[in-house]
Image (cartoon, helix red, strand yellow):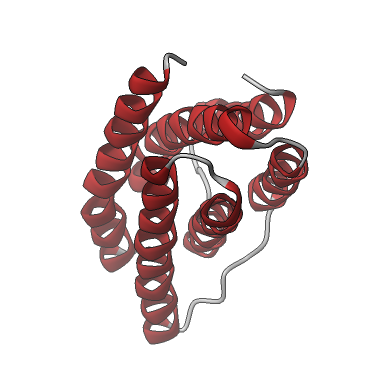
Length: 174
């Protein structure tokens, strides 16, 4: 696992464990910012991968990430607009953005099969971390039922992305 992926996942994992130890957890506006940021990080990586990936299967996966995560962000934005909730930037959303930027910088240095392996490895780790955050913190902490329902609704897509990324990774021989 590269350093950027480790930093990104560690930030989210530390936040998840720290928040779950506290009784309150993140607020709905903070959850909204985390969700939008997490999706945007994956959209940005997907855009880079559609341009740089060597294997067609990796390019197709990257395009799916762009499409699916853009859809989730659209749903989240529509919901927070409807609820008149302004996403509140927080330490987790800032760490996700920083980790995403570091991952992009690292990926930009790679080419061919090395790029493909690094991108897919990141996707495996990232999706697992996001699923853990959804299960342990975001869904349990959401106060608004519509926000909670959206998080529950999109969770299976993250699981499918994780399984798809693992499948590609297995074919590549890690």
